[in-house]
Image (cartoon, rainbow, N blue to C red; front, side, top):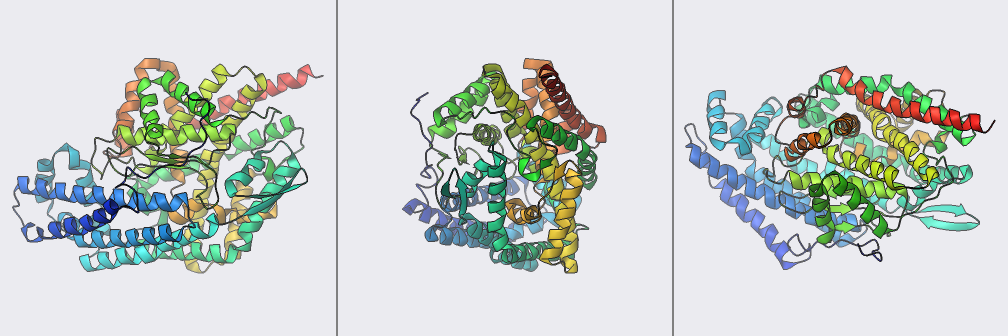
Length: 598
């Protein structure tokens, strides 16, 4: 691999030649044409519709949805590469409006199919075949929550300029934030991603300063950001509970994920019961750092003086080697993302922070956004997002309706990819201090992905309950403080600025209750990875079957086929037991190290 590689900027040429091209303009026109052609078959949707004709209509719906997904991705990716670009902002708003209009124009098909008698629907599902079965069955499952055609059209238009627009406003406001931090006598102006490098600095005073600056900036806009959140939550309640008839706010996400409410309740309850496990870890980390008690500033503090940095080319090589050691197919698929120049890894002003992978439609090579700065965590993030990309490509044989894995399974390949990288690092790294830091990073990652996300979900449940009752921003702030106090117990000292942490979490704005999928995925992968270590080559087909399924089967059914019962609390506790084993190993090593110094 070329050792001179540096973080690059992606190209969007594979999407109609880019969002400013004539081809993209024609694609938007084609959306109108295809929608009109589909509307022309409306009068054919009557009892006794021939199976062959039904399948032809389904394929038209698929073509239209596929084109819409690609157009939306072109506009969205252009926006996220520079959220301050007014042309990109305008185009994304236009495409979102177009999406709502197209959905309204074709809504009749979904409403007609939902309203069919069971016997007639079963006849047509059988005729459509396995490719469309799950999508059609899921459409029917939403029948109790579906409104009339006129009402559904109003909701679609409302969302384009309501909840979705509020989320875009949040992204636009927060993406322009600049943070000022003094380090070694120099005043630095930083993006959020750059600032958070210092949240993991070896120096306690630098970590504290980084967090204080982060929440100082967010807190300055707290009245506005809190109001955006309050309105998103109110909109969610008005639509889903008041109009559609869901019994709880989180039940909406569970239905989207095709998970029984009881499974999610079990996941969150088992996570809550294991808070003391991580509190035990934080007490260990305090001892290793020579502190009487961790501060919240120190949760992700490095435990060694090893300040390892990886240049971009080295990171790519390490990820490639880790994937290839598991299976060449995994590595080959990940390599396609770089070959197509679908990675944006530069850190630059206006670009969206964090990282994501976007697979627009079946058969496309995904786009990956990174903000690469050379930290070990950045290498893990690269592996994580490329894992998502591999997942999307493996599931590419399914139609656009079912190729995306549901949220609970969406983190499977990505988290598995991270664990492959960790094993590779531990096996190839000669520096004992770096290996030790990797093990502590695993515990930090397990906290961040499981317990932290579970408590975010618990906060969301509370916020969605209290906001419709008139809860103010300060009352939400107090509720979040209680959430933190239960999560950390006496093991971690909390500072007041963390009371505003919730307004800095994009997921609770854009995708309510998404966060529990991280805990679900991490605990699942801990179980999968344990099986991989036990079974070796025999395990690989099981993983590939899970990934290749995409979203074509219910998560509980898919996992049951491979021997995992997610309705059983013991399944979730098994993931925490793996974490407890790692913690015991770290405690033993820390004890031995202390004894050797006496």
